[in-house]
Length: 116
Image 1 (cartoon, rainbow, N blue to C red):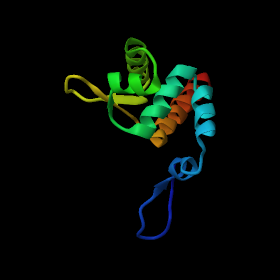
Image 2 (cartoon, rainbow, N blue to C red):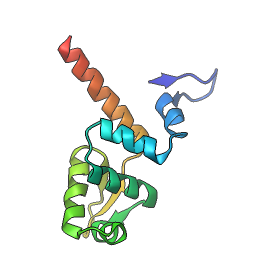
Image 3 (cartoon, rainbow, N blue to C red):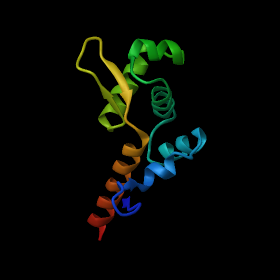
Image 4 (tube, one colour):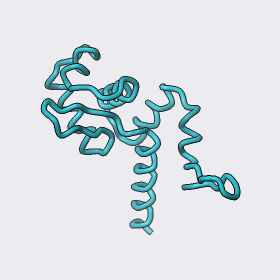
């Protein structure tokens, strides 16, 4: 969804403006409503706050097992919430929440269209 902000100005995605004012608990609730597990939410929010990290660095800072964090990161990557670099060792970064919400909304709209 895009709103027009005036003649000659760029359009601004509505969700970007809405998300900008959300608190962390609200973001966590939204992600939970979209089917993420508590551990996935924890890792996604952590990565969103801290930027690009190796799985080992993320695991150390979150105080979780490296293998567990790597599994969660791969799960988030499959769901489109995390991207990784091609280098070795891989570094992971959270996809911006605005893009995540846009993708979830689109998926829900597509589901609704199929049901109709």
